[in-house]
Amino acid sequence: MPHPDLAASLTAELDGLLRAADAELVARFPGELPGRQPVHTVYVPADVVDAGLVPRWGREAHEVLAGHRPLLAGLVGRAADEVLPLVAAKLDREPVEDLRIDLEDGYGNRTDAEEDGHVRAAATALARAQREGAAPPFSGIRVKSLEAPTRARSVRSLTGFLTDLLEAGGHLDGFVVTLPKVTSVAQVEAMVLACGRVEDALGLDSGSLRFEIQVETPQSVLGPDGTALVARMIHAGQGRVGGLHYGTYDYSAFCGIPAPFQAADHPVADHAKLVMQAAAAGTGVRLSDGSTNVLPVGPPVQVRSAWVVHTGLVRRALERGYYQGWDLHPAQLPSRFAATYAFYREHAPAAAARLRAYLDGAGGAVADEPATARALSDLLVRGLDCGALLADEVDALVGVPAGELLALARPRRG
Image (cartoon, rainbow, N blue to C red):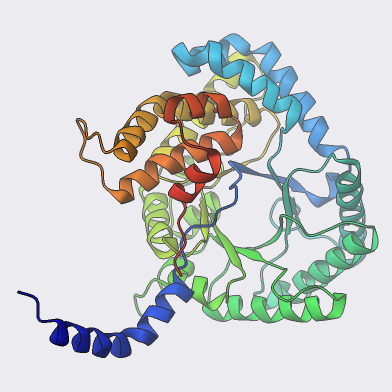
């Protein structure tokens, strides 16, 4: 028989003992964010950004799809008749989900006057696109590293871009700063300080400026004492870190991988992303895979070869729980969305059936638990978010309202 006095007194004692640990758990690991995660980030050098960039990329992607539709249909397989019309609609509606205006490797080193001019023009272009409804739902800039040789330029571009964006009537909804080549926790702490100073100077709400850490140096993954510095970086961000983005080629090069073998599916890449994944779990910080520089341009044989690489990497990333990646060219948009849509449409019926059986308490061939129910719900929510699945399809499969499905997919602590 239970001993009520003993149980009550022991519980009270344990509550006192664990109160600080309980609070720290909620603060450090609040759970996944409820909002949408983009399926990709498109990197474009700052000097070629204008207000019409997103619709132009959509048109160019459409042209590639129209010219090589049978090639992509062959890669998608039996789902092509369902997937390709959805891809075409996506290219009309929202060809770019997340735009990163690049002032780092994709842009190169310029004179201060030249970079200042490109920063001002790009900020003004983004503000105009926002006003005209031509901007993507997510956007941001990648500044240069906070290492000593590029620190001043990084800060100058950051402060200049934000000042010009706001003065031109732009906003920071869905905006993020990408911090590249991070080599120490101190750089993350410095970025937190910089964000606070910028907010104060520009009259922004505290905490409104967020950034993502680009993991493209081994020092980001393993510190000199063998600890996983990326985990410490997340928490040093004081709630401002929104993502960890893997840098395929810098990381591979730093690890000494020969150029022909540098790719997002190399073992060194898998190791880095597994550490990133474990470090970010439960924090609300989201992961992004890197890019492939094999571009679908030129004759059909080259387009098909590049699409084979790209669709394979996209699907592989999704299977491993990396729901976002980088795209570098308009011709990668059809393969990005086709591979993504095929993945969700392939797995949605079985996921919905298992989730429905779990919610109904009906059991079945798989004994699912609450954690798996979250994963099943998350797959359906992500499919809805990107346009791979339609609301009426998911409702028919599961019979659960979208709001309830989201609550199942991404519960929060506290």
